[in-house]
Image (cartoon, rainbow, N blue to C red; front, side):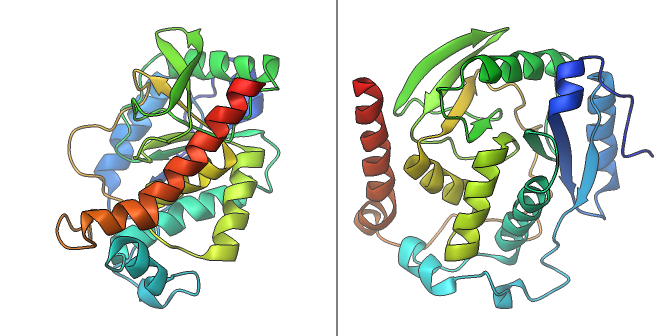
Length: 265
């Protein structure tokens, strides 16, 4: 099986975009399904070998911050969550040294539509023609009704500014400044929580988050293999008031600050 299917027909996507598919080596069936969908969409891509928490002691990873995780969530991260974070982090670090200005990170359960190349082309073209709008990361896989503003109609979807970024990392489009900023944040602060939650927190501070409504690349039915080896616990953790005070309130305040600044300019 080839990791690089037929090249995309759209020149803008081909020159401006890199696509990485995060996949555990053992999940060949998932990768084949994703490869078939990307081939049908006429998109080039490369596989990124996911960090497997079953093969190493990720709790001892130098970037892991268990005490900070306990403070924010009342519990430490699972090996699956740490491996998922490190997989996305690796993709972003490699992208920071690449020539393309955009990176689409896909997990291997992404449901890629046949018209994705054209949609990405429209999205990239919009970004080039609207440089005043800060764009760090766009969620293509989930939405949120909280703290948003409509930016543009693109094909079958609507591009929304999101000051409170949606949770889920199945399909996220990163810009070079956004990726570099998040990498620096992680290098300075370590892994404080699940990757999608920490993306939300960082993007609330940067003000550069967006999403597409409806999601252009939702997850396929079933659990993601990236963190399926040790999924998030649905029980335990902090009392609700501590979660709000320690984690949600700072994100809300950062989001409100950017919303206020946006109204003034």
